[in-house]
Length: 305
Image (cartoon, rainbow, N blue to C red; front, side, top):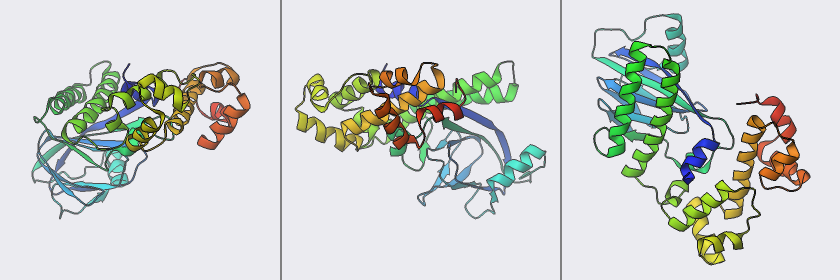
């Protein structure tokens, strides 16, 4: 399994597609900050998005907007339209109250969000920009985003048996294609995703992610990938923005979080699987990273995720 796939599996990506949303101009929504990543896909019509960093983005049919950090933003038929706070809009939809159903230009959006089970978020999520605009028909992965979105639309339109499962699978596929499309159109110069393009640093990431239980040291990792200790340390820190052993510690704790929710083993066994021979040391580091001891974390999180 490649390094990014391992990360996505470990963070337990989940997703929920809200629905297909028909709108008629004038319309506008102020989207409040959310703990989950959000996406908007423009099925038909046109709209404008106000980015968290102040940019105004014109969306065309087939385009998709991804808000990785759930930052506050707005979306409207045009920048000057009056906007309704998103909680009020959701409340009206659930109550069956007509909203934005005037005589102006018709627009259809698909809205949804992505959830990740474990905190802290993996560095690759933190490294993403406030908003990502995926245009259709420019690169292979942008075309694939469109194709997956079209399948999602068909499921939303037809509500066939198993639709909720299909939508979950499709939206998770969508997430991977969004990340690939982002890398195609704007490859970052630093951060976890840029590290995946460095063969030796990427190999080091994969070694740690595949075998967190190993007694890794800076020297052993550098030896495995054929670099000197100092060159490896500097290159890894430059790209990933943390030291190799800091990354290893954080990865071990993420793995431990997953095991505590999915594995009925004793905490001492989970400690060993996560790279800690001392249960006391594991308890101490786990609490420093999550604010809870492993035992408390297991009690408050539902078993099986």
